[in-house]
Each structure stands twice: as structure tokens, then as C-alpha cells.
Length: 129
Image (tube, rainbow, N blue to C red):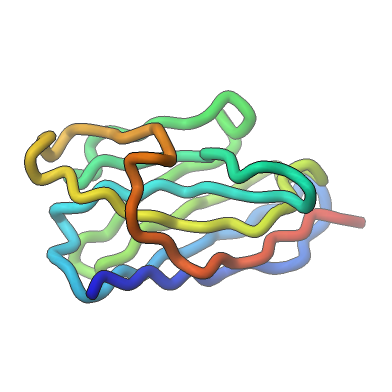
């Protein structure tokens, strides 16, 4: 049973940084692409960033481009989201999710939330002074 566990959420001041981690277990890690999503109170869940199973391809939504960096360590079964220059509008619960892209290829980056079929429980990020 594939499981994803997020960690690293915290309260941070505007302009600050955080690094989120997503630990994956119960599956062949290098077969899955991983996406980060977030959901603010009263809003729909939205995509943030995504990385292929190989780690060679990444995609960022416009709202975080240039500020966030996604990476993965296949030896540790972990995907990271480095968040810099945080803004109050980045406040949300952040989720990681997985998509088995074995048939699509190791360089494929799924960018639709409907392609992801396993989700973690989320970690809270609050950006406030």
C-alpha cells in the first residue's frame, strides 16, 4: 500500500523560507511522479509543482515560479519542496501526491490533479507577521 507523509510545515514570516518533505513508502519510488498541491481555507485545491519519476523534469505553476524548487532523492524515497520568498497568499495546507508513470515514461510530468491517485494527509504552512 503506497503511503505519502508530508512534513516541514510551519509558521513563517513573509519573505522567509521553508522546506517541505514528502516521504513515500510501500511502492517502487522511482516509478512514481510526485506533485505538490495546496488548499487554502475556502478555496479549491490547486497545483504547485510536479516532478517526473526520473527527477529530470519539473514543472511549476506561475504563482510559485522562481520562488519554489522541487527535487527528489530516490535513495531516500523523498521529494522536497524548497519554498523561498514566501508570501501570505502561500498560506495553505500542502499535500503531496503520486502518479505511477511507468507506462508514460520516466520523463513524463503529470500536471493535472486528476492524474494523481494517492495523497498524503497534508502539512500546514502559514505565512504571517
